[in-house]
Amino acid sequence: MEFKKRILCIGAGYVGGPTMAVIALKCPEYRIDVVDINQDRINAWNSDDLPIFEPGLFEIVKERRGKNLFFSTDTEENITKADIIFVSVNTPTKTFGEGAGMASDLQYWEATAHQIVKHAQSDKIIVEKSTLPVRTAEAMERILKMHSGNIKFEVVSNPEFLAEGTAISDLLEADRVLIGAHDTEEGNRASQEIADIYRHWLPEEKIITTNLWSSELSKLIANAFLAQRISSINSISALCEKTDADISEIAHAIGSDSRIGSKFLQTSVGFGGSCFKKDILNLVYISKSYGLYEVADYWESVVTMNEYQKSRFVRKIIKEMFNTVAGKKITLFGFAFKANTGDTRESPAIDITKSLLDENVRVTIHDPEAIENAKIDLKGIEKNITYETDPYRAAANSNAIIITTEWEQFKDLDYSKIYDSMEKPAFIFDGRNILDHRKLFSIGFNVYPIGKQQLTHFS
Ligand code: UDX
Ligand code: UDX
Image (cartoon, rainbow, N blue to C red; front, side, top):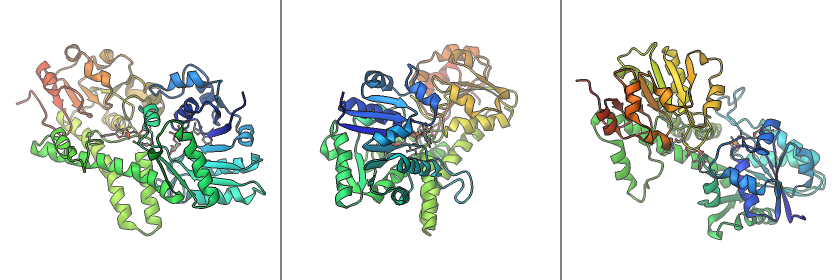
């Protein structure tokens, strides 16, 4: 079949994979190639066992794979043939040199730009899909223009706003699509060409076009605002625990004000994921680099509050278990950074596990999807860790259960059966406030939610 257009995506990760699968589904007249340097990842994309767990993804991949959706490691040939290249390689926090621990590490990005220039033989639109520091397109353009001869590259920013666990519905029913381009004839043409992709399934009013720098910066700011809401509610959870105010009641009361809104007010043991911390630290670094120290401090406090929430939670566990947790068995229900994903990047469960291991606790980890990733995260310190796929076996003989991820199935477990199998007194620390605390208390548990009254049988 002759395809109307060829789209290439470099980077077959959590962002590139689902996004391209949905574009392939909605644009059958386009050929979509997704490439990655990681052969194992590509093999998995071509198998029945996809490299990422995302509800609804497998069905779409299965339907389009081999028709207009192709996964390979053949970057060079695909660069040559593509009209549009989405770049979706990772941009982790720098671990070395200037800006270590804060700035984005753009080495994969730069390498990709060089690769594109080397193999391109015709004009192309280059789309920034990865989250990037503001004004990255400038550097990208410099590299692309350096050796391009007669070939023209137009760089466009089209950040992705999908959240893991809901990636497919976020893509299909996106609140908005953002496209940033230069305000020139070529820039506008490229912007419209990218908009045409999304017009296949989204109405015109959902497509926002801006200048390049607003688009790049909007992605960082969207994540910073979302994370800020969580840190704000988490800061108040600490105050609730001192005052007998209830954080769920407060979230409902303030969220009913349409100016505030009800989403992202769920208190937790802290936010995780590959984006929030990385993007805020990047924002902090950028602000500092422009001498905007007050702006930097303001946003850095969102991350500080998140660290506080995690360490506060662990301190509470230790204190409430009579300050003697050494040798005790504590079971984590959940290791993923949120429900409906196997992803554990920056998961609060990692820090909690490490802190418990420092106290010589025997830790058991149960998660429906994330055990393999947990093993990778905890490699080298696994001496006192047990992994368990069955929640009842995981809980048996434990002194305490900690809810670290809000998996729906944790709500429906038989907690009487679990209680009977545990050491007494039995503790539950609900780091996500998802369980029926009164019911657990009546079964016999000592229950410690976040930002709510604790229910204990101690006088
Ligand atoms: C990543 C970034 O973390 C995020 O900031 C950005 O918005 C999009 O890209 P994600 O898709 O979750 O998000 O990352 P990851 O799952 O690590 O996928 C990146 C992929 O790029 C990996 O599979 C990696 O092998 C691949 N890659 C990396 C290349 O193909 N070429 C490279 O040079 C570098
Ligand atoms: C986030 C953004 O939502 C998405 O738009 C962007 O493209 C990537 O970063 P993601 O990290 O996949 O997506 O998940 P998200 O649902 O935002 O959750 C992030 C973390 O915040 C999770 O650990 C989650 O459990 C936590 N969270 C979320 C809360 O603690 N409380 C809330 O009310 C919402």
